[in-house]
Length: 241
Image (cartoon, rainbow, N blue to C red):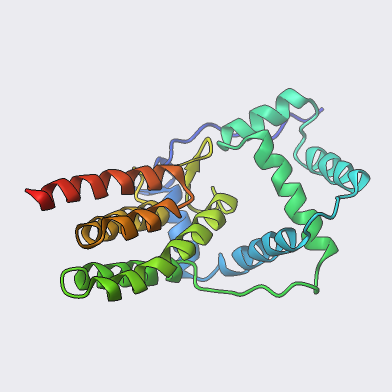
């Protein structure tokens, strides 16, 4: 009997292979694939399945189809027991919920194929564009707070959408969430954008505290919302001084 598919646990950022005196990390491999455009079709298919799942509404999945897909996956990866499945997931920093979400996405991707349109955007364009607008809003905050709010308020909804997408894309090239909470310390694009959102709203709070707080209240990720509240409070206190 073949052994269950496994691999050593590799710390994020650790070397995955070497070539002569050079060593390459998982991040290097992903960046190289991104540069060559090799991730584009994979990401496009993932986004298509995610959008199909979003459009499925209250429709129910066929349990027999899901069970068959799970069994095939386990057979292909030599995962015979439930313990082997859990170990396979743990090595990859995944949970049973992630495992179930994978099959749900592909189920709806297969069943709604050709029926749902998916908007394709560059992998990093949305956060970059948002950060540029946040910087503009922060600059406007000193001279025209109303204009700054007009720029920043729609970005809150956009940030929520990006955060939701990041949750579904978690682990595909970048880890954004750990145990359901946004990772604020690994330099991911969502966390960086959240920090910039906090800075922009804190500056605007000096001009209009209530309006800035209303905008902050609309931020869905609790970690970012708390960070914004703290930034607003700090900037307001310093503004009073």
